[in-house]
Image 1 (cartoon, rainbow, N blue to C red):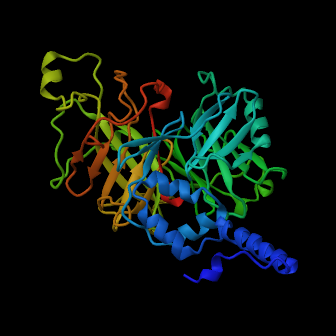
Image 2: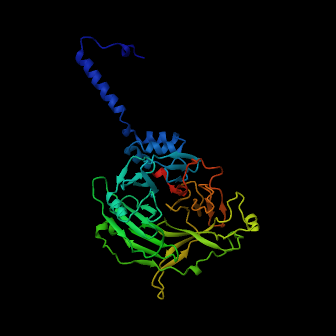
Length: 440
């Protein structure tokens, strides 16, 4: 080490002393500019973080880190997380629970695209990022539509909010990001999501779909809805997100007219495992999913419930984990078939046998497809979450698992051990949604 480095500067050089301190201060400022961290150094830090929660927190530090981290290759395979309405986030791969602070004066709904939709007690509405919790987008115009329809998030017996969907970020198909709120499975309210201080355009679709809605989905510049009974598919062109250009009573645009319920049956196929339940099955859910540029409908089958259970049925057909009678047994996947048939006006649902390397993650609040190889998932499988529990056993992951489209088998439970979840989850908060933290 050079000995002169430790010596004080000469006393007779005040200008040199001043310049030295100025240079030191500027250097200190440059070193403390954390947003300017080089991407290669940021990648090194990410690779050394073993916890996915820590990697999500790193991305939430500032916008430059989030942008640079998004361009880096994934460090390892990761399953999506599960989000509960109380703000609990469950890391499925590591069975670790994390929390997001939901305001005490608000009721939250999972809104897809890693967002929570908040309805406050004073009637305000907003969007909150499910991981950072910081960016909040106020939606005063949408709040006015909810008040006009007497929607009270605390008391949902009369006008419950049954689904909230947020479109992806602005794209060539949508000039503005949109949010859709479904009330009582019939009315859909649409609003743009502009930054605070800008006016949002809104549209109320009170009688547009004309059926009980099972699910809604933003896809290819439209909003789609599938019916609960006949599986009718109807769409509305969103005019590139310019809702003010859509008339108050837009004309109907039906893609699939649906089929009679008696023709919707769970058929046995030779390559699929059979369910020995002799009392029939019912459709327990329908989900719209975008996969490889196509719109899919996923049909969920469960055992038909009985008014009373005999001792024989309870012992013969229960599952090993004791969660047996009314439980999910199979999934079917369909795509829209618009092949030309001169004797038919509308398209029809066509069964899909495989997912071309994708895996489906379905839940009542949010469903989507993802490449199986990039997410630590199995190809041609449906990852599903708990949806209903008639006996109110209280297990938030009770009816969850992985369904194989190739064998017709279900692997349960979703986690090999009890979920690390708080015991204070209310019954209305026990139906989680899939979220993708590595995209946050």
